[in-house]
Amino acid sequence: MLGVLKKPLSKMIAGSPWVYRMNTGSCNGCDVELATVALCPRYDTSRFGVKLSGSPKHADIVVITGPMTIRCKDAAYRIFSQIPEPKVVMTVGNCPISGNVFQDSYAIDPPISKHFPVDVSVAGCPPSPWAILDGFVKCIEIWEKRVAEQLD
Amino acid sequence: MLTTLKTVLANIAKGPATSQYPFKEEKVPAGFRGKVTYDPTKCIGCKTCVHVCAGKAIKINEKEDSFDFTIWDGTCTRCQMCENFCPTGAIKVTDNYHNAYLAEDAYKRACYGNIPYIHCSECNKTIKPLPEVVAQEKLKGENSAYIERSVICPDCRRKMMAKDLMKGLAR
Image (cartoon, rainbow over all chains, first blue to last red; front, top):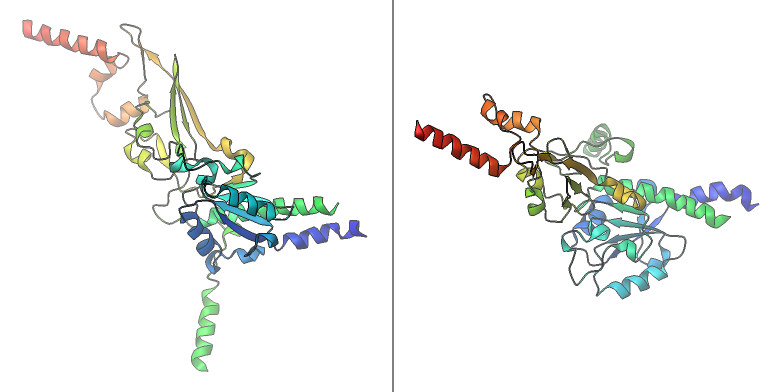
C-alpha cells in the first residue's frame, strides 16, 4: 500500500518544507538578506512552499548564518539536536564556509561543516537573494530524496 | 467603485511584482559584485591583491621554478579591492550571482593558476615574467627599448643602465 503511495507522498511532503533560521554569531547582514528579502513577496519563497517556522521541532530545513561563535556553540548543538530527522542543512553567507574576515579569531570556531553535516552552501557577503533562492531549490531536491528514503 | 476597478485593472496590466527568478534569468543591477575570476595569462605576481584582500581569499605560493595563485570565493568578501588594485587587470569581479552550491563542490570553485618563472638572459636568475599582453597594454606605441631587455633581472638591468650612462659620459 505504502509502496504505491511513496512517490506522491514524498512529492507532497517536499512541497512544503519548513525553515528554521539559526544565527550562530552572524553580523545580521545575511539575516537581513534572508528573512526580509528572500522570504518577502518580492522574491517569494512561498512559491516553493518554504515557510519560516518558529520552533526547531517543526523544521525540515535548517538555515545557519554566522561563523559559530564559541559562546553560542552549546546552544546551537542543543537546538540542532531538537530538529527531527530527516533534515537538510543550508548555510548562508561566507562566514559558515570559512569564517570570512573573522577567520583566525579566538572567539569563533568555523567552518560549520566541522559541527553539522552541511548539504548546501550559499556564498556571498551577504549573498544575493537569487543565490538564496537557488539554495532553497537545491535544498528541496535533497529534502525530497531524504523523505523518499525515510518512507522505504 | 470605479477607482477600485481602475486600480485592479491597472495592477493586472502591470503583471506580478514577484521576481520570476529560478524560472527566468534576473537582470543584475549595475555595480553588482559577484564571483571573482582570475586570468593567469595577465598575472605578473606582484602580490598587491594578497596584501589588500580583506578575507584572505587570495594566496600566492612561491615555489622553486613557478608560483601558484589561488583565489577561493568561499572566503571572498566581494570588496572588489583586488580588482581596483590589480595593475594588469588579471582579477575581475563578475556579476555572476549563481553562488549556491552543494557543500561537496565548495573547493571546486577556487580559481587556480600556475605561472612558471623565466630566467634572466644575463645571470640566469629566476624572475617573474611580464606577459606579452600586459606589455602591449601598458607600454603603448614605441617600446623597442623595453622589448630588447624584457628578460633581464632588475640587478642586471641596473648594471646595464649604469654602463650605458658611463659610455655616454665618456664620450
